[in-house]
Amino acid sequence: MTNSITLSAPDYTDADFQLLQSIARTQAGICLPATKKALVYSRVSRRVREMQLSSFREYLAFTTSPAGTVEMEKLICALTTNVTGFFREVNHFDHLRTVVMPELAPALRKGKRGRIWSAACSTGQEPWSIAMTVAGSFPEIGNYDFRILATDINSDVVARAASATYAPDELEGIPEKDRTSFLKLYDGAYRFSETLQRLPVFKVLNLNAAWPFHGSFSVIFCRNVVIYFDDETREALWKRLAERIEPGGFLYVGHSERVANAKLCGLVSIAPTIYQKEA
Ligand SMILES: C[S@@+](CC[C@H](N)C(=O)[O-])C[C@H]1O[C@@H](n2cnc3c(N)ncnc32)[C@H](O)[C@@H]1O
Image (cartoon, rainbow, N blue to C red):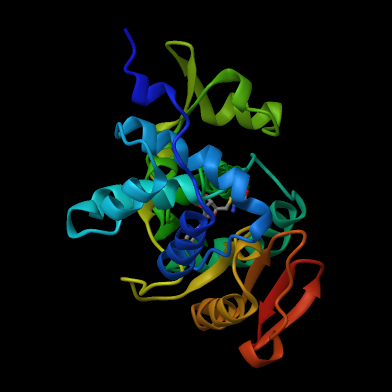
């Protein structure tokens, strides 16, 4: 018989929601407006039930205690929105193929280091689309010093992305020629080829905390994540990202996003949602 605690709806007050707003803001830079109160309930109540607790108050008391470090990570995962898709906002992949690769490929052949960052990679459709685009236009890419850094704050989505494996109904958006070239069917699921798997490196990373790596990028994809941040957090992030773009390199942002402080960051808008770092 199912335990009655797991069946009943956990208590959820305005004070609980306010604490969740404050946690999301301080831990991840994510703003949760009042309109998200019900959405947050539906996402977090599962964690409350799984821990066999009867209220958000108890759950949050545990999560914010020294014993709650692991649960805090799970809470942050529950508070993120991970909608994505292969070749989402395809103009960025067209730009990568037709403008970036023709310059990057000869430079890599001469021994240059090449890096692209997918800075909020969710379940991996973005970095794998980058990998297919790059390998599609430069098949010997694996022989050169080229990597795609793929990061996200949510450890669950990063693990899914790193598995390189997708169900048949998740392949929407991948052109037929790329499916044939880069995906193989194993036990009912599709997996990216070993050659393609050499390109991305997956890591958990909070964009609003310290970044434990050096070096700069030819292109940064930072798409559909700053919409969850406030203006101050967003502008600070654009500035930090711009500092990591090579002169002449590019920043791609989401379709509803813009870099308000572009000039201050040394970025020039060259097309909708595409910025170039001054040379
Ligand atoms: C809507 S998805 C966008 C995925 C992909 N960039 C795209 O455009 O399809 C937003 C992602 O941002 C991540 N995210 C939210 N806050 C973050 C933060 N502070 N640091 C890193 N990633 C964050 C979420 O976990 C989520 O996977």
